[in-house]
Image (cartoon, rainbow, N blue to C red; front, side):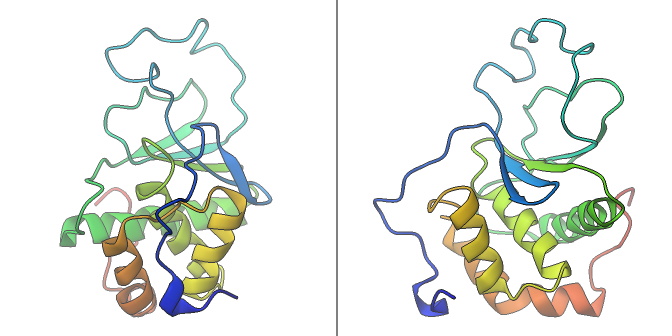
Length: 177
């Protein structure tokens, strides 16, 4: 396992493509294509196409909605310092993603680049599955990109506060709150 003191991203880390990567079986992390945003042209047959996911957690407010018959939870927040509302919602979304994944659903957690916001919620989901924060970060970087969680504020919070908040129930379990 990676030494937690070296948990921050190197300056020369490569950034991933938008396409999702499978972190664990049925648990994916990805980004949003540049043209797949609200106000942009919808892909041909967008709502009629087969979509490989049962549940999508979208953390980029400008992403196009997913096609019909796919459960989507949306909460856009900044790729910057964490605010209390963003922390609460990120934990609630991770709990929902974890529950649906454990029920057998194919879950995608996505943001704009598929690096920071999706990395934060993915790390929380893995922590709910029993991973320590450093091990969760390491697994996501191995499966997606070394650039994942390049937002040091997110990493510091995951390493210092997230585990306690996940176990204390400080954040709401409801994604409808």
